[in-house]
Length: 389
Length: 112
Image (cartoon, rainbow over the protein chains, first blue to last red):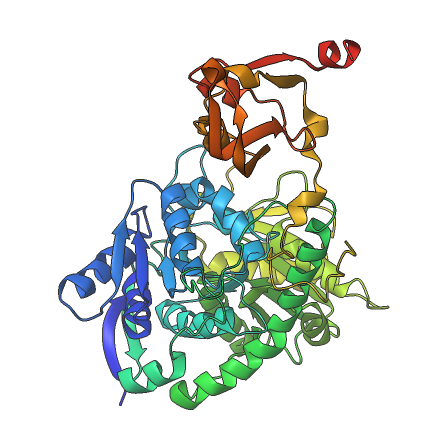
């Protein structure tokens, strides 16, 4: 029996962590992630989980302690956002190479400067090239389920890579909605326990982790990491099918919303996809054929599958909640990459919106759809939604 | 040693044992430690502090002559292994009897 609870997105993630019951959780607060570790600390204090919590004095130490515990053989989690991710970056970058299956919820927030506590994706978009699996969530429900999926994915013996599970700071992170929490026993059976085939506390079989590897081995080890990353897509679907048995939902790489016969489509991540779906419904009711693609698995990026669903759509607009200064915006760049192999490519338009938590409304998305439908787009020129002047 | 390809390597940075023996890090050196065995008490401070394990240690029953002309038996240190000594000078800094002096590499090679 599942239960419906009114939860914020951060508490939904904490609920997933309660059911996963990790051996160690390393806690350092940063807005808007703080409630995750606060709720979880309550579970620990009340004896609901038997996790060891390690409060630390900075995010750099948080990720360091996480790495240490994971290498020792524990199932470990920590959580962060924005500058916190930036401060732990040095260690974050080392985790995929160490092949430690750490799962870290990230509540997306703008990166300084100027200082801003609200949502955009510039924090995690900076971490797309180092080998973490990245899964984006539209709402608290998805964040909860993605956590369950991520832990199994990260710990799969053919993968053993860390994973970030994203949701939008404040918008879904602090916004409360009804979340379906699935039966404790079923979830516990699904997530199982971490069974590392090697770990540093196994004194019978000592090995070295993180040694020096100069030109003689570094390249080989990185190629091996890429091979593990290539396994993710297949295993993501397999584990998704297993999770479906509990949740009765499907776990594709991305959600396609009324795309099949669309004259124009929008691609957008996370909570804005919800607003965009409402817009699609409204415009469809007015007879305008529009659709939406919401990427969920962002790393590794499912290029072929995205190409398959977008290939017959005449115009595609990509809405990015972050910029890549001096380059195409991150999601736009991926969509453009995905479509390059086509002989006849859709027309493309890049939009940037919502930086630093600036609101986006259905009327904004409708305006973008109408621009796309008019065909007056430019694949080279970035457009801005909600920018003054 | 034959280098392994990426498919054969153990997962992650779990390298074959003793691969660091192939890294002759001594070529990075600008200062060379000159050890005076007559001042050495074989206290092993230098061995403990050396970041590269570049100081050779052996077991000697007959002993070696050291500080104050005494014969030091058991575990004794020998010359630094210049294949691995990076010349950081930590050994010279830590040595209680000042038995190690750091000199410039070109000085050491020209006097040979």
